Image (cartoon, rainbow, N blue to C red; front, side, top):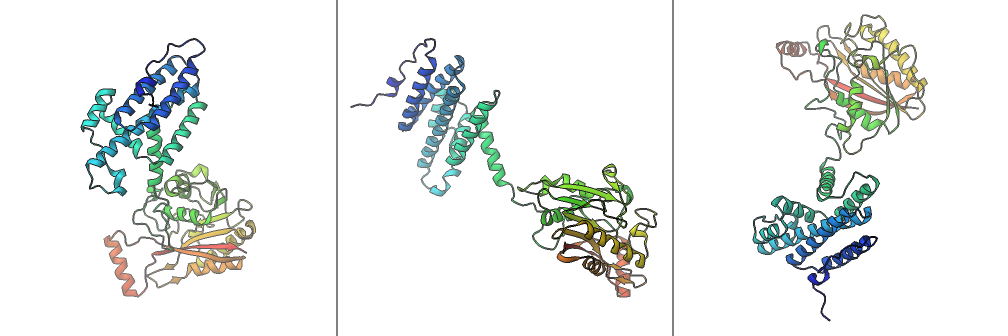
Length: 422
């Protein structure tokens, strides 16, 4: 028995009778869906598109149910995807040298006779055909997922609608996610935490160059390796609040794995743009909160930044070595009292060398000894350059010559020591 032709199936779109419009449109959409499955030629697909486009317009004109309107729109978009597929197949057949695995790279000639015919018959533009080509290139699984998501959104939100442009936008967003790096280059895969370009530089520009500065990227790596979602993180020597700036920018360096945790800041002498968010506190007297999951502190570098933070006698930067060691021991004990077993504490510091008088102080060894005496064990260690050779000024050249002449190396490496509470 001969199958009905496309013209026969859609010969007449009946005059709607009140109460019967939706049933008629649903039936015609079912017929159109079946005919689309059978369609083999561009002419057949074009014909189905014309009818479905008319049904879509009628469903909106008579304000049929949201589901029926969405069914009509979805079918019309599926036909457009099919048009894109047929055009691509025709292009491939003309360019037989294109290998099968490169099919998704084939671009339809928008000035081919087939393309011109479709544009003429259906009033499409080149941009329309380009969109259909993009729909056709989309993997089936992704296309179906996007259609389902946007249909659901259109049902829930009255203002939302299903459209070719909306589907393509969602598809592009998914491709963009796939193209984004899994991890940020700021996060280092080794214990060498050096950064050719510093993104989170010094906040206190008015202070000029001071030697206690570390790039914010170090905080980013500490957070990444030592902080879990939801942790309470304490910065008891927050200074100018560099650590907060890095925390607030976490979407920039967390890659595809962004999560939140709680950050609180304290300092003996709060300063800088985040000053009002930093609570004044003397860490040598007590720890400011109970049960922190992670503590991180960039200790004022012994012998390098005297009088640069304050004129206070209780400021670590201003202390003589013996007093400095006593104060650091108190800090280690206060951290240990506040933390539970298994939690982590990171202390950031370089060693100290004075090329003029030949004094060498292995500061990081002192820190390790004091934290271990307080009940911690060394858990991890990383290294970062203080970049003192970055700018070859005349003063830097003189210091280099003095270091060589006195056989006392300049201190460039910062150690990031992380301890686990026992």
